[in-house]
Amino acid sequence: MKLLTITVPCYNSEDYMEKCIKSLLVGGDEVEILIVDDGSKDMTPEIADAFEKKYPGIVRAIHQENGGHGAAVNAGLAQASGLFFKVVDSDDWVEPDSYRAILGKLKELAGGRETLDMMISNFVYEKEGAKHKRVMRYASVLPQNTLFRWEDAKRFWKGQYILMHSVIYRTKLLRDCGLELPRHTFYVDNLFVYQPLPYVQNMYYMDLDFYRYFIGRSDQSVNEQVMISRIDQQIKVNKIMVDAYDLRKIQNRKLRHYMFNYLEIITVISTVMLIRSGTKENLEKKRELWRYIKQQDLRLFHRLRNGIMGHTMNLPGRGGRKISIAAYKISQKVVGFN
Image (cartoon, rainbow, N blue to C red; front, side, top):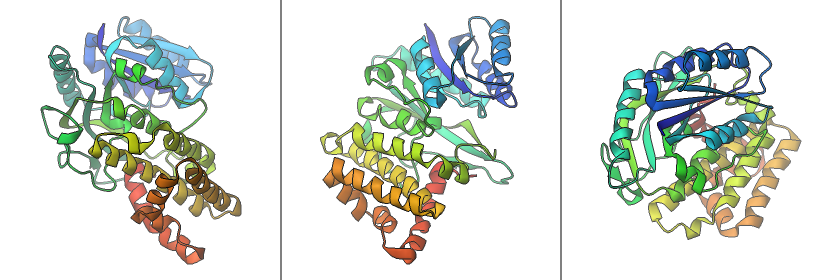
């Protein structure tokens, strides 16, 4: 069994996937790199096969019909042999020294008495053209260099969230929680992080800038105009998150509070994008989303709507819509729109 499986979803990634994969090879024999070619139409399949041939036993190429980012992650999880599991997108990369340190700690904790469920580290917004790289770090809220539980965490501030870039999960935990991401849907990384959370008992945080999250391509899923064009997929993910759990039944208070805040920011992002599009159709979709939440969980609806961000999102009229854009700055910090 490998220590860590890293799945790299690839779709028409020929221009940047090599940088990503080469950064992952630093892990050596303890790491399994699954390159999932999701029906690419460029040289991605050939590049994946070349890496598999050059690094047998470390790199595996998986070829499948196009099913989207979620289907690629599902394929990686289904074939993973590692004790732990991480997703690294094909236009991102990892920092080698932090990578080695994390692998060393994973190996140490894998032999311990208590089971590690989730490893957390920082990620860097590698925004093209930005002089100063913003870092999402958690030193202010999470204990460092020790196993801890939800009750040991402090309160996260608005805009501070554990995203896909931050986490390494125990592979069996992901399987036990029944994680299966929807096909042909963007923004499923939110489900990847959110759905397993109630299954997580033991965590470990290393204050290292490990993951480098590239932002800058015009076709990238977090480009604002691209998000608006794919708003139905954002809404789909939002609704799945609403349906995933009755948050009142999450026993740990701090976990329950964190999950509400996460769901709140996703709902804010959906609402902001619908408002910023400015079309009558999308303003109706905004109303429909809130009607859906109300129908599914009335208490959740009132809590979201009466919260500071939810209240801002639902002020009436044109003036209210202008004020609601202020919440856009918070969602910007989370998503890192380019």
